[in-house]
Image (cartoon, rainbow, N blue to C red; front, side, top):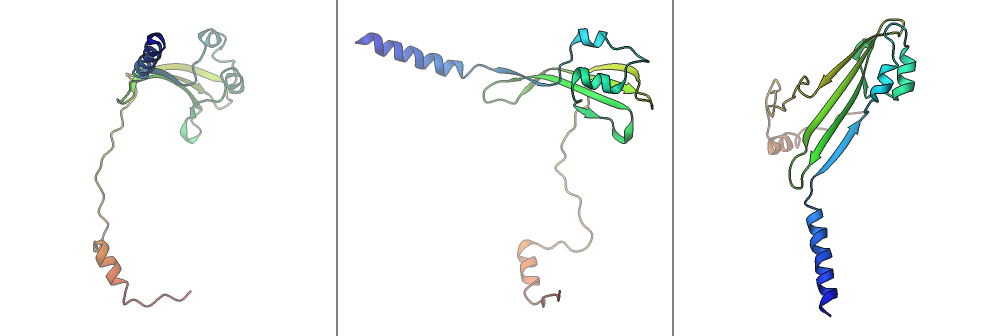
Length: 145
């Protein structure tokens, strides 16, 4: 009689403890190093790169001829923020004829951290509160449409 209770209790404890384990998640496009060796600067076309590695994570602005493949690993511990373990950014640069010019590698140490600023730019004119806005519209006739 006690064996099923202990077995059930052991299964419940193992289930609860397994929920406390951190998880490592993979995001983005991890490029195969052997496939990177097949690329030839000066002769490989952009369409070949995209056929080999898939759609890029992002493209450079204003037709800069750059495509970016971004991959990262994050560790998520229960009750905490996700922590960055590893980030690799592979940047392919192409000339005007869409021929590969260069391949550049960046990691998480080179990237920029963007901070959120919680300030508000004031608007010109009078700043009405909520009640003032409601009361100021009471005497105003509706605008014809």
